[in-house]
Length: 431
Image (cartoon, rainbow, N blue to C red; front, side, top):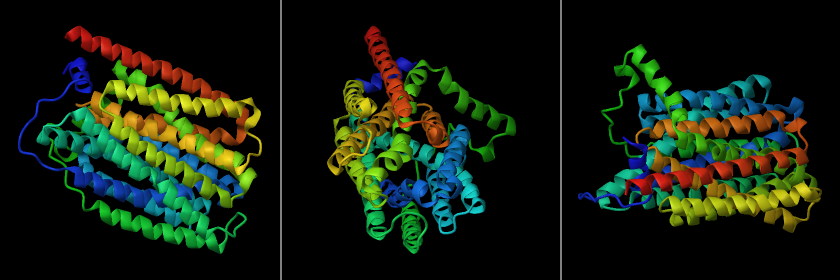
């Protein structure tokens, strides 16, 4: 199908088809399953660089994790197609369980294998999430005669809003359990990871209640394909999106979304929050980050209906984050007061909520016939950027990191505007 025909879904209503079916409950189940799994994993990730400090085990493990994530994201779309979206989601949860369990006895022999496996599991679960959510939104819109772009935006808003609240809940749990700790491994951190392991188990159980996705007869599974056909399918999934100008223009914004998130995890918590209010304050600052992320995701999702709204929201998110980074690069990244820290945390969370909802909605609308491949590219570039930050952050000063972030933000925004103008002109020329 002509890409312009796909882009038309961004700007006009789809023809309604009767026989309404409510798919919204699947979004509720998916959202709360991810909430349980990631409130545990997210809080654990925030603490890795401060509780597993011996030979930088925590930071290095995260770098290995995201490097593995990057590599396996190249084949994730093929795995999701082979197993089916629901089964891929369930398989992906096992990596998070194993990683939390490894933190009960963190050594190079437990954390490194767990990090490598989590990279594989994460690539599967996130490609599965994007594919499942987009497919569910399309089915809901088609069966209820609703505007596809609006439903994709609403479903993404709900998912990312609920998901982002994991930072609030998980970090409040960390704050309560570690309130009297001063850093390093203690009995309190062991108890915390036991609690997290139990919560992840509940999230895995909830994932089984998802509705099995509609079958796609046109997409052969591995079991029914020859090895040669499987290799061709893999090559198409990896290479084909890179030959699409729409994806090329979207990649810089994808990379920036990973860069700004990694900055929060690797630099902001360690070099800004901890020196100002201590290790115990990391949970509080990240709770504010998560709360603003969740609220913004819900609002942004509700406001998303097509390309014009996506352009407006991305512009706003880029602007407020640019203001914070410029303020920090001008010398305001020294020890900060609690009010300034919480304000910065909130602004960073708002930006993250915007980029998560709008990138997922944009890819879901643009790449209707290769949804798995599009979301695989999303995770390839996000995870690659995050891996680079974790590996090199110990050797990069705060000032240099901020300059890099601002440069990538400017480049990505120019590419995004170029994409929106091109799509608008291409669609107009077809009218």
